[in-house]
Amino acid sequence: MFPMEAHEDDDLALVMGMPRRELFTVRGFVTAIDLAVLNSLEDESWFATAAILADDVEAKEVQVGVVFSRESQVLLNEDGIIMHVATVPAEAMELGPVLRSLRDLARMGAEQMMDAQARSVTLRGYFNDDHMESVRPYFIMVYEVVFAADTPAPQGYSWVDRRHLRDVALEPLSIQIAEGLNPVRKPSDEG
Image (cartoon, rainbow, N blue to C red; front, side, top):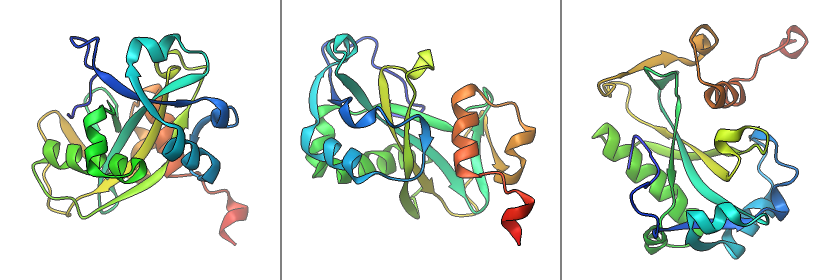
């Protein structure tokens, strides 16, 4: 499942979709969770092929995004990516209700990639951006999966201290995720 990639060879695979209706106010990476969005996802999601969802102006494909962390570090690959994204197959619903299934899918994929057991999984927010072409068709639930401090980075990856992410070349989506996870503190915020 990770690194997460689309199933380009399986055009008939069913993936999760949801109505756009609750997403019009969601721009970029949002960490303030809106219950209307979660309720829509839980109660109104469905499965269709990615092509059908892409052609539906009133729907978006739901994906799971994972940020891997240990202590104060996040996992970064050679391309400057800190969040790995996967489609949500219909089989994922065998794990339980929608929101629990998405969380468990994030945990299972992360554990598989790291070959280690996760300590915790937390919904950190979600991402929706109709202006960023690469992610326009998707609504991404963003989870942080935490591993033990001694968990090694897979080949091609490295652990980077969150405080130093601004010093590293990140791809555009990862820039937004990094800023959302580590908001810049203004001097007036520290008093």
